Length: 639
Image (cartoon, rainbow, N blue to C red; front, top):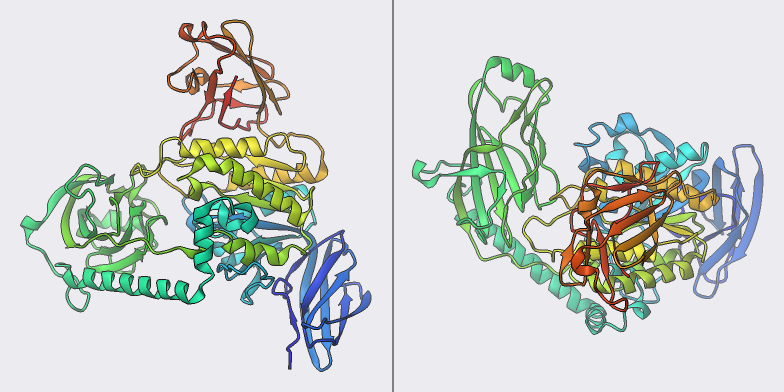
């Protein structure tokens, strides 16, 4: 017997798009009658019916719902029934892209220590589901493991930080409107994974990777082989580590094994450059009775971020461990681990590949109730553990072309939504020159799938510099420029500038509240078409005026542009090979005038002149703002 089912989006606590017709669908026995009953909190009742097709699929187009709720749905077929409760009608948004969209509030506690105190949003619901790639172009099914959660209490910690900030700000501007967030982002996913085959079939390597994934048995074999390889690597690592017993307990090393080291810092240009395996880091510190009391019972070890994994001990007791490089290390100190007198902090750092270390620019120490202890400096010692060949990178099938489009986006093309929030680009930094083309195809695909006027908000990449130099110097600048160009002067879409929310060496900056608020203002503006106060200054014209002057015009700059005193230093003029700062810069309302360096004043009028503003990997400081305090995007243009 075919079981009566609903598409996994439709579950208890779901948010349904208000004020427009919407589609309900599922599966049942072929050629069976499906009865649907909808009722609201005012005891209004509506009845509908439809029939399943020869393959068991059934669809029902439902009437528009008024804002609010709760609503209830009852779906029946013969003796089978599904009942959904606590449904709300509001505005539904897709959150997709990669890890900066996915990043949960639990990873932003340095910026927002108590999310529960800031966010209590009973009418914001977030749909979390299992996310795995599908490489079958006719797939219209979603994973069955999906659950709507309410944005309050402990559930907040696992929710998208940027999504929750967006929802709170959106509700501030649209009081009484429930918000539904469909959380689809997948860390490490390039844009090709979010596009169907027609949008990348001109790339032979993308086609090859997609074809590989058609062979499920081959893909399963690769994954099994890589799991065995990884398990063997870690087993060998533990067996050969001189500080670990066979039972995984700690044992001492001779004093001569320890060498003084500065923390934090990367191991580049040291004897541990390109060292792979385990390294032990030791720091001893003294605590008085008074200091121990001031730290209090809820002290935390805050140890920045490390490359790659760590296991951290205090006086021989394990305090916490993290399996990969990105999360901030925040380990609650277990009761009884600290004591008056000498204490020993021991970090087992595991480096899988490339060069490891402790990321500079972070706090490394103890944070307590009334006392913080900073451990940074040279009073650290290191000892080599187990040295192994580099652990090869596993195949990340979620990053393969088409896999996320066919698994997550294609199945919901019939879903009624209000708009989309897109944060992606980091994983395309190996080929930034191609990103403009792919992003334009992505935008066109969005319009095809969800309608030509369905709003789409893109988060521009934040400021970031890869600490080991593994990313080409201008790769992120080029991706930001592609984002700026693709979303420039669109009435139905817009760009949220986030460069000022970045952190020098953190791929996942914790400041997600400001980008969320900016995106809510922009989305509200796109939906209501009530002006452009939600956008920062946007370059709309650049031209030469005479032999020595460049004229720039911006929109979204009512009341005039605001420049910092050193704004001139962030501009470069050149011919593509040699770049120079302009001798002079002045603002006049919504326009800027730059003076050409003498060496460029004699260029023939037919020769293109390049102009860059904040065109670097990590432009943390912003120098052009509008009266609302919103920054201008970095840019590169040719005149």
